[in-house]
Image (spheres, rainbow, N blue to C red):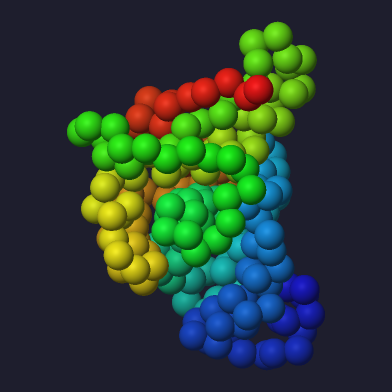
Length: 204
């Protein structure tokens, strides 16, 4: 898709290429992403490589590295976007805007406010089952939802929740795993403190 866009459209102007990327490419990279959202470093790097390669073709950004380019363009890494969407989907669940097929339970917990129960595999389950459960939406989305402040969770409308969440995210570094780059864990769980996302209950 990237080669098709760059072949058909000769412009390398920032506004035009960014619009083409969002319209024809990013939508495909993110289709149904909450269900298959990759957790492995290699998989995250392969997805980021698409955005990394495309943004390098934008006129005037040739001398910036990938992390600098996404900051300059005012866009999130694909990893950050997937985590952002999970948080917003959880917000929709709490407000009855989407179904809750995962059986995720919500409750108010003192100073922590609204939290969700993170479902874990049984201790006796095989390792691959534990990995699948740990990387599933019902685990990762719950952990992400639990670490965001109540100022996001308690917003009355989706647009207001998005605005509050983006206000928080723009203050955080966004340096996704990228081939040949030295990086620390870019997940919001690492940046905001994963311990807050561990309200757990074992799977039945």
